[in-house]
Length: 99
Image (cartoon, rainbow, N blue to C red; front, side, top):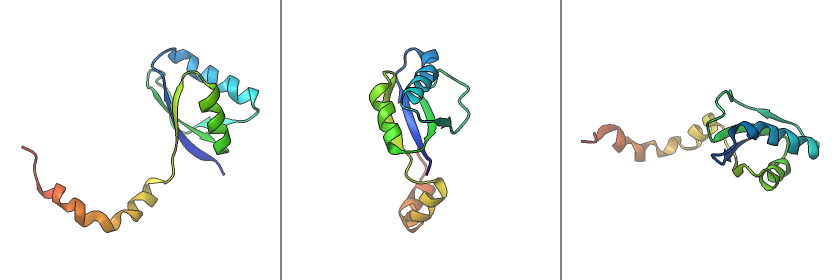
């Protein structure tokens, strides 16, 4: 099942990021897709969708511009439901104002 990964790039050679991803994915014969609009090459983060964790490991191992690859484990709605019982603990922050 495809999974989203957050990729942190080095702040160098911005225009080489996508060509490097393309070359590694072609070399190891897997596909990736950009999950969200990636119009600004100056941002150090990119969200990509991969078919397996092994593909993420290959990218992290072989791409010289990638510093970190993090798997998204939960979707926002699932995270909010799982944390709903903790709202009592967070209610203090809704009342207190920072001066």
